[in-house]
Image (tube, rainbow, N blue to C red; front, side, top):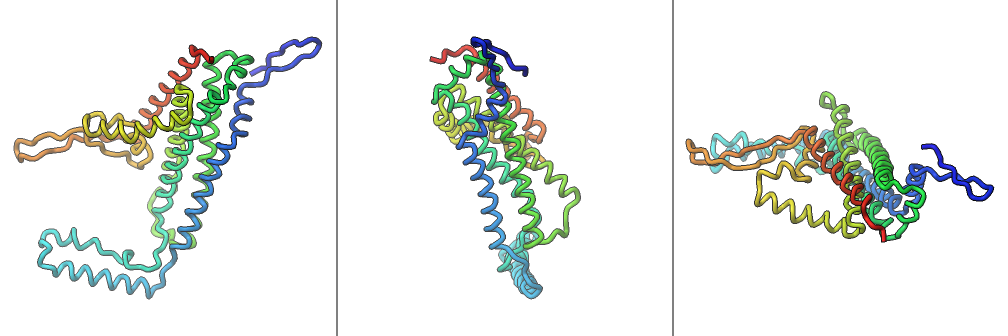
Length: 326
């Protein structure tokens, strides 16, 4: 964007770039820095706790644990109270890992940790977005901003773009931090073998979906707070929606579960999506009920959440364009 020159006497002043102003504003906000620092600190704390509570068991410890597991499996199979056709299913639950006093860090903890980091930063992103959307209404700084940039839709979209870019970058750094610390845990307290095929590709795919979720959460939080004009009210409304409204929909209208935000969030971050039961139908042949299931893929969930977010931002921009700031 080229600067607009405004003549004031003999001096020429340049109107600051809206994009640059928004970048400086979000960088200078103490709440943003505090929340992101808290997120990174929690990752480090989780690493330290896991490092202290895991370890590489000796061969003798593994042998003793395997012996204990074999004894319980033998007792289970000899138990007359366990039906013969269910012994394989019931008795296979005893493994040596359950009886190790010092347990190693499992390789599956890397993608699980990536999901946890993504969920945590998505929650932080929503708070950051809501704070960014409501802070200027509380501080009453928007009228001053609009004196040199009166195009309100452009203001809204620029604010959302800078916010989302900041959150995406922060979440990528968080995932990189966890990848490094998680890899250290595997090397120090676990084993890289056996490693599933496409392990790193699947891990990267999980992390990218988590990063996308954080960006959508930030934009959604901003749009909601900008509509309500208050950060606290936006967070309260979000809590009521997830705690009350969505649970009511699950109970009263099963068919609508496939469109709920939380179901789609879960489907987005899970590797293969999720199955959602939308109804129960009576089977005349057996007299029992069969479940009607809809599979929510990663792609469908991502597109659904993206549409919800885009609509929320668009509504916020249109309302802001027509709203009286007094």
